[in-house]
Amino acid sequence: QIVSEVLMKKLIELPASPDTVQFPLLPTHEKFIESYQKISEIHASEDAEDYYPLEYKYLDQSLSSYRDPKSHFTVKAEVLEEKFSWEDLEPSSATRDSDEETEKKSKSKESTQPPKSVVPIRRSSSPHRAQPNSGFMNISTESMLPKKRMVMLDIDEVRELQQQNTVKRRRRNDEEARERQRKKKEQQEEAKRKRQEEKLRKQQEAAERKQRAEREREAKKLAKQQEKEAKKLAKLQQQTAKTQDFRHMQQPAVNQPVLQQPFLGMSAVPSLRPILPPGVNNFQYQQPGAPRMNLQYPQVPTIPQVQQQPVQRTLPTTEELLKTLFDNANCIDEEQKKMISDFMYGKSRAPPDPSKPIAQLLLNEEVVQAEDGTHWSEQILFEINYNSGTWRKLRRRKPLNQ
Image (cartoon, rainbow, N blue to C red):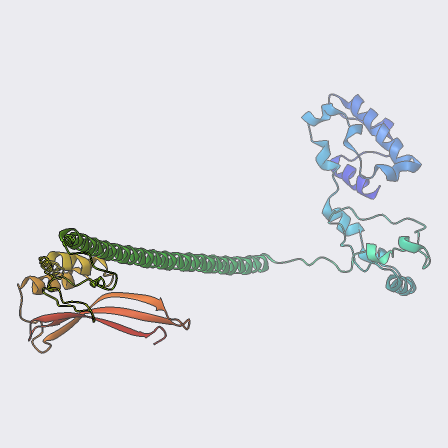
């Protein structure tokens, strides 16, 4: 009612009775008088508090062409600050003590902030106070009241707070940027490490495949050599068998002629003559008690013995030798290959370094396993002696951990 009276006074000075109201400046004064009578009846009724502040629906819409009535019936902060006091809402000391004891027993310890509305909270004439034994509905009225008043800040303080917030925001953005850079760098390092591991793994697999292929080539080469030797041995045995058959065919059968002798008794029959070897002639054999007989046997021609000449192996050419060296080599480069080729073909007889007349070049290196299970590094070296003009291959072994 106080607010409506103040606003109505600002709008127009109305008399105490609406019958004496005269509006010479307003053409629709009759409608305004009716609206004013309705407002007066509402203020005079017992339910006037329910319509505080006044609502816009009781005003005539035709008045908006002259003056906006809503702006005059809106509650103003200055009027409320003059009529409103925080002391009216604060409880007494006795009530505060009882509320504190009740609050300690309750489970909820949170305090609600006062509403930011300009309209004050109305207090009931007989406020309900929660009892200590009211269960979960034990809510203190003090928690519903504001704990402290709002702090009014100066515009300079607001600007200073804004600057502080700006500095904090920039610092936070810088930290986030540094964190993103750190994570990006870690991701790049992790990707680089994975690429290196993948490259090393591929190199190891390639080395293993190369060693496996070399072992397979060596096994095939050894098998071929064994097959060649077996063929040569079989051929030699076949030639020997043919030679023996030829000797047997050239030896004629010895036919003893039938001798015309007179019949003799059993005691006079000579015993059988032993078989003589070829080339033995005029062998006189006399049996005791028997007459001597001169027997002549035909002479068997001797078979000339075939002399077996050793199989001559042809030496490999320089091109074949170089091909064998370079096919099995896995540690030699093009410059070393050219150095060996020039020496083998006789193009260079002087060492590259005069202080080192003997040069050793690493041809092949592989890991072998001994009978006891240990692994050794086996190296094949090609040694060139420029002083004597000779070369040789060396095999060197050493433990893998050295």
